[in-house]
Image (tube, rainbow, N blue to C red; front, side, top):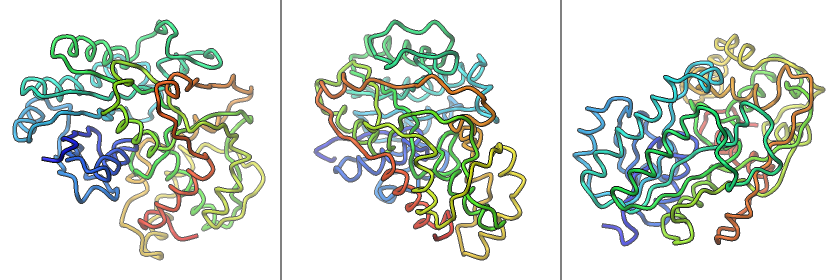
Length: 363
């Protein structure tokens, strides 16, 4: 048994889950990685991977029964529908996400020993997918009155905590970026694939989105460091925290750095819907994979649902400038977590990771 304890990371092959596995392994924890696919990060080889579909309560309970004692959980699992955004408003998608959390946590809690759980939310907690939100959004604001699986999961977690005596921390990050592929929401591989296909077709790498606006992001590795901090910090107990890199950015100002990292020529704006443009070039991608000796991943396997997310992030097809979506991180800093990341450096890093893993062609 590690002196740090044992952490179970649910959704371990996702953007946050993969980075969280890496972080806890690096800190000397025993790590159980739960996901349908094995995570690809540096720490994956030292984690105990358990392949589970959390939508299946029987298989999940059976899988949990065979685990060693667990005292911490980072719940980063997520169910999204094809096409991504429409599912955010559908009750069955919300119900599925609640069931997945309960399917995992109920057999874990029945065994005893759980001390702390980190649960992921996001800006939809403030109703950002419904309306403009206050600038900045603060954790102490009243719950936004809309249906959301965040509320279902949060209410379940609070009730389970009162019953079983564990502590929890809820995180609300903004635009998480990491190295996972096949994810529901990770723009890094989408940008990389777009650049490679643009270069292959001999067209400039132009920004494909809509009106300029200022935004925030957060590095998946920063989220992982926050989860590790929360596992041991009394200041994180039963609290909700916003989480960002600490700076702001605009896509057009970031675009030259992305082009430089990917070895392509930036060009003028070229509005298009990546959710339509990219899948139509699946055969072109297969040729790139063969030519560069890349991992034999189809375009669909790399993108997941993230090309739909990219169109949303880039404001593709929109005509009016968005009201800024900014999160106050003062509460987290006052609690004692101060890590920050330069957003341009973050994008360069993760695009470089995808190149090093032979998911993207070299620059």
